[in-house]
Image 1 (tube, rainbow, N blue to C red):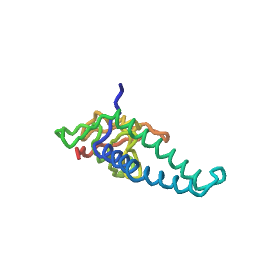
Image 2: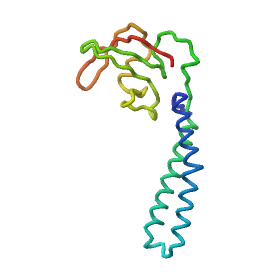
Image 3: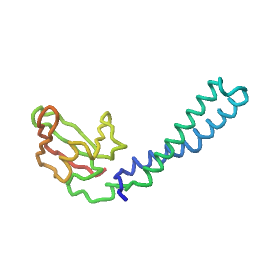
Image 4: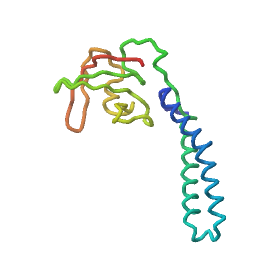
Amino acid sequence: MNFTPMTKQGAEALQLELTDLKKIQRPRVVADIAEAREHGDLKENAEYHAAREQQGFIEGRIQEIESKLGAVQIIDVTTLKNTGKVIFGTTLDLVNLETDDEVTYKIVGDDEADIKINKISVNSPIARALIGKEEGEVVVVKTPKGNVEYEIVEVKYI
């Protein structure tokens, strides 16, 4: 079986969502369906159909999360010794050598990636170029607009 890497925080967030879906959302939609059934003819009952559609979404999401959590390998970099090497879960301070712009990224699993909060997927081109490199190294990242050179300023295991 292939395992998918995920940070401890990402796994905890999925577990919280799963708990919410099972203990709050699912019972609420079951109650909505029961209430809508009391209104009579189900063929023309919009509330009933909306509740059933919501139930299908919730059940699908529960299955999806359970499947992901079943195939996840949780990596907690806070328990590892900081060697200055870029690995999954590390937070990096980078400098674009062309523009002198500084950026901080955290390398996370596909499900956790969100560029708006500077979390990049381990499978993204920039992460693939950075994995295995060390503080002080210059890395060339191939982008659609051409090659970009970054210097790894700091690698944090947080």
